[in-house]
Length: 333
Image (cartoon, rainbow, N blue to C red; front, side, top):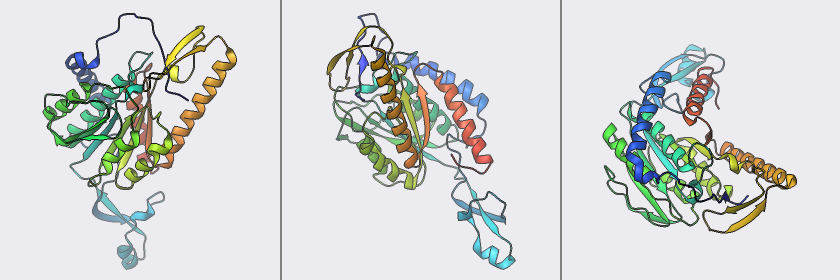
């Protein structure tokens, strides 16, 4: 499917997010703090709770335990199967890969897709820094050209066409707010993005094991980003947040609808009164989303889908609750 977006009539639209980022971020911080602090307790629990990596004490094996954690020396001495407990690291490093290519500057629901990206980044940042952990980000507004690391407290980095920007990982609420201001103030530029190159920035240089969160609409061909995603999963717990607009899933019956590819500017007119065309569009969209889900599953990434016409924060809370429930039952998702 092409990255097409309906051409709307010249009605007044909200100011660009960068122009009102301070007010938006203030409301987001209040909303995220109230809901996440009330529903997700635990100073060191995040979006992908895990068993930790530091060796701890041994205990007897119970059905459902991970056999990769078998403590063979103790098992040999006692002739009873034992597993080695692990202790979670008290300082976690989380990295965000935020896709702000032109296809994200679209939305027909309550939010633009790029606003959902910023909102998801705010929620993940809150969950990360409240335990004293560090968070950094890489931002893509186009394809292929890397910008050097720079300080980002209090100001957004310049992002021209084809710029990939790295914001170094730091701890502290003030630093986290500076990161969010930098994300919200990044201007979306025309031109095709390179999601694979954006994800690859999290692989180089190699970092100690942590959490990597990729936020995108994943409309780029899967062969462009699937391999970097699999490579990322080797060292890190990976969460893929897919941002979707309802018009990308089905077309309304509104007659002739002009649609435009936001990355190339190519314009088409579509006769949406044709039910067969709408059905073909819906079928192609379903197949496309299934292919994205399969590629993410093949890469071993946890998959969260956020829509512009739904309560994104409630969807995040449900996702975290499901992850924790699966973890306590000794299963993986």
